[in-house]
Amino acid sequence: MTQLRTHNPDAARPRKPATAAPIDASFLETLLGYNARRAALAVIEVFLERMAPYGLRPVDFSVMSLVTHNPGITSRQLCTALGILPPNLVGMINALEGRGLIERKPHPHDGRALGIHLTAAGRKLMQEAEQTAAALEGDVGNRLSPAELKTLIRLLKKVYKPG
Amino acid sequence: MTQLRTHNPDAARPRKPATAAPIDASFLETLLGYNARRAALAVIEVFLERMAPYGLRPVDFSVMSLVTHNPGITSRQLCTALGILPPNLVGMINALEGRGLIERKPHPHDGRALGIHLTAAGRKLMQEAEQTAAALEGDVGNRLSPAELKTLIRLLKKVYKPG
DNA sequence: TATTGTTATACTCTATAACTATA
DNA sequence: TATAGTTATAGAGTATAACAATA
Image 1 (cartoon, helix red, strand yellow):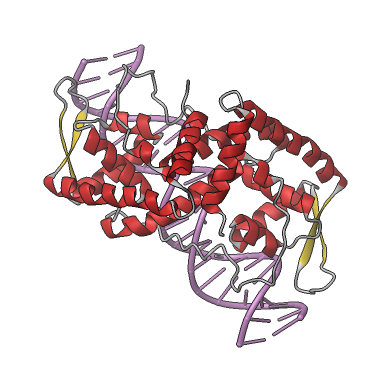
Image 2: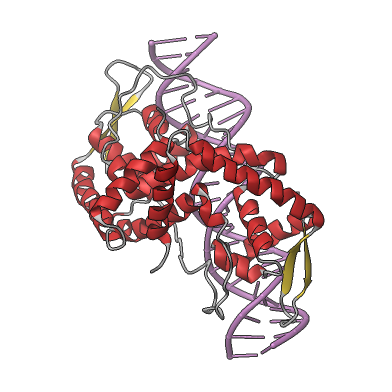
């Protein structure tokens, strides 16, 4: 069974609202890495809450989404696409298969590999889960306009995508 | 002694350049969280390389930078500002103090707390390290224009900063 | 009674080495 | 010889509970 991360967002916060500590973090806030990590953690925090009903952590969702849009994808391809190491994927796949969300079938062209497919239950789950994920984007739009969100994603891609 | 993360960037990549796997990740790439995490990891990867000569992981650099710009800051304040849990900060502080980069002095107004200050060695190290960190921003500018970088950071702040 | 700093500890995440079956 | 999938295991990151000293 997949163990969902507890991720208590208050855990790293003051045990009691502190007495106004005007800490100067201005230098750190000029750094792209610092801001990108902070933003990623903030979004992932909301993601964790919204996906908890589906029993999907971000990485599980990513795997399921790739299987959804690439039926028959192999473990090897999942690892490459998501930057996961093969030994660390095994448990996730086993858990998802154990939940009846995916199934492994022999690969048509390669006897070593196994193609991963969604089950009917997996398809049903992902229809809702992807809708929830898309809706989450709109909710961040409480802080960002649709145009800003589009710009932000475009610039983030420029940072991490080769070429 | 602070143990630097190995973080072998090739570890999660194909053991041999794969035979062109045209995986469709288009849905994931519409998600802010996915893109933000990918971008953060890409920048942090470069950060790790550049900061290795100083023996500073991202979190060590963040702590040192806050101490630099907030002399006498307490552990408690560092934890709040960086989202670190107190038990997890202790080892970092001890390691930095053991390297002679910081020192703890009694807090003027609170007998429970200890104010953290840079040593001369710490000041010297951070002068170079912050310069290196700033230069790293310019190098990402190989992919982003200065204006785009500025926009990107502004939008990232809107995502994670309250208000 | 509450907070700072700390120890001990557990759980998750990420990484390496090595094995098997197949190519 | 090389690759896909797997097992075992080690290390780093993150979490909770509980304690002493001070407020």
